[in-house]
Image (cartoon, rainbow, N blue to C red; front, side, top):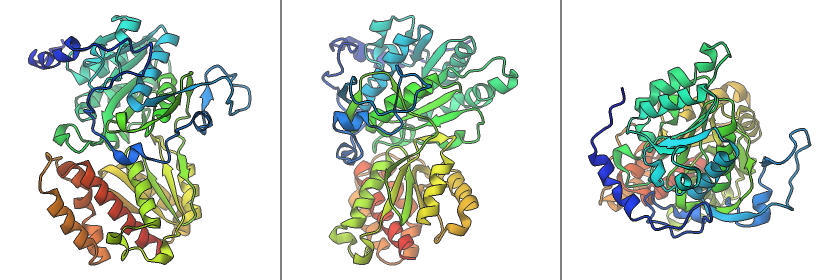
Length: 456
């Protein structure tokens, strides 16, 4: 029996329904946006990796149009396809609309999705496709996951939403012990391959302990499950459609600070991007920098500062190192991850730095480092480094961030030992001091790390 939580929670969300005066979202995505509840990341908005023109968007590597014959050779078709400027939440909404329109068995469900969702990813879908296919659920994550498993096993395309990834843990047993193992347990006769679980993830700087976590590492040992984390609207739409159509259950984790920060031209047609394929964003020969989700943009800024360091970092980056060629890779799919692309890159550059928001111990970076160490040990010229969060609860925003910032910057200039030890405290800043300090800390620490590794 499913027991719904206190009705007070639903009462808090009534204004979302009462004050909704937007036009129908399936007619256009150019609507007035609500305040950015997910925060804003300036470096993402100005990133060179986002595709701002139609031609660059249509030439996205790996893009496959749904109206093409699968037996034909891959082509970059520019004519006949159009794009529209979208942010990430609009790309999610666009992908869901296409999936629902082309698959009559597809349903979308979760907490408040019929009202548009906390981040507006499902706005207008209930009016377009009916409340039989877009509907709210009780506040029970294990119930949402279990219901999705049942739907998928009966042949439906189940697209579930866990409102925040921090609350996915009650559904852990359903996802790991049921969804991931269903095909094996049934001897291949049944599966939950038509189950996709969407959930916002990562930090925004003011989310506190229950709205800031990156739990992808907890699911890393679940054989039979795929984990995908996009970083841009084009990626988000293509990877989400690929996840929905993949014959395996997929955990699709969307960095919530990028919902409105990442904006680019997105093809309006039906297309997919390949799962389990990493994307090389900038080629290099001196060091491989690997990340996924929000930290990809922090890495981009760190590489930029390595080339042109500000006065506060000039002493740490000698002129001879500012021409270092860093290869930046976006992993995209966390499980199963693209081992070949990463290992081949490390064999060429001979150095690897892994950056992720989750904690270091037991994080995804540990698995990647171990596998790369095994496959490319004789080619490495420096130890593999990880720049991650640390083992602390996510505190609330603190007003003393500038004082701590100055203290950490001073400690980094003393020695490599102090800078390396302080990395946990620096990256923890995104939970204590907000996104702006997290950005400063990540850029500074990443630059120091690159300097130390390349100078070996």
